[in-house]
Image 1 (cartoon, rainbow over the protein chains, first blue to last red):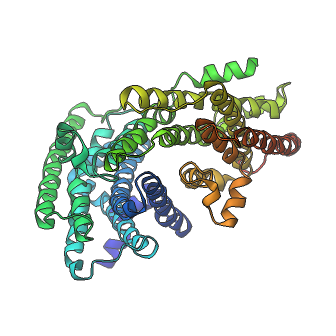
Image 2 (image 1 turned 120 degrees about the vertical axis):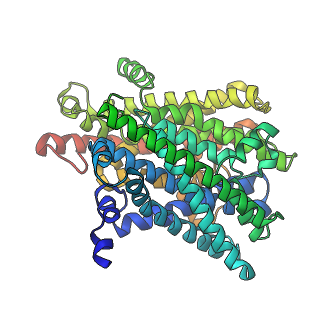
Image 3 (image 1 turned 90 degrees about the vertical axis):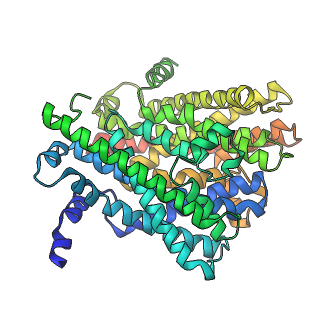
Length: 261
Length: 251
């Protein structure tokens, strides 16, 4: 089992196409960079609204940064496969494409999990956001559910990103969209009604509300929010599985996967 | 001047998707956040934060464009042509830095247009003449910072890898959100050594017609000039080393 894990597909994929493989890069981009991100938005919000709003914003940005990490890395793995011409080989291989994609998702998922945990630690030590002692089991459940919904969305996002010849603009606009519409810095209830409806269809929105409720910064029913987050995650998973199977069929038929873009 | 116009024409074709985001979409994102945060507490004076949105986009653009000004020449294999050209390397880099700060101004103008017409923010510019003057001072300081970035990024490959890491700390350090006067002593001195801090300070002071706005502008120009002279000698040195050895740091 150890050997399979050590030399298995996930590990090979990580070694071949994942961005951060040294401890120094990991510390800089998984601890220092998110820390600066939290400080930046905490400063923006507290200088605008007041320092009592700081915890609210930091919590939102911890969840957002986790989502950003998973989305960027999942998409980058697809992008690298495409750049090196191995995307078609994945489809041509006897292993089911979905299994390959899910295995590729393990490293971004673990990476995101690390960022989430470190984020909560940073929040605890530097922004005095105390761990909810009685709610640790709910917090753990929230982390798992958030990871599920975000990775499901990232799978869809990464598949759709294949349609773009240069994905940078698409990625940056999507992340900016998440930053504004997922309730990261302010409650989604402030959005106009159609936009709030849209926000509630995105992953993360309910998770952020639940996370703030666990930390007693908002007063929502955590389990209800987590239930909605699971439903949203499941919907994205179904759509992305469908999309992947359609792309696979098209690739087998045409002999190329979006090669002319 | 000819080089400057060519540079601006080259960069304003907006083929680079990253620049499209920085110039057109990033101000929208920050203004949206300011707009909705303003609804949390209605009595906020939003002028400073509209300006902050513009400054963030300007700085981001200068960081990414000027920082990679020379390295991108290496990627395009045109660096050797630059070294062999009759124009000095300093003139070339300075032109690039200047053109980037001129283009960064687009994002400031766009931010103000978005803020006024899309978000209905009242931008309280008390005196347009002084404001324009302070913007010119800011652009000069941004150009000098861009010039320094181009040199630093050439000197070390590692710095180039980490440009994302200096994006937000610089915004915070230059007093975009919190005035530098409120920083701890050490941070305050570091902040005052950055030319952009004074440029930003002078623009912020011009908005409220502060008495110290002219002195801030003068200090901004003086600090920027010191860096400009320093950069001149460093680039001359780089040029000599490049001609002699054919390589330097990241290039």
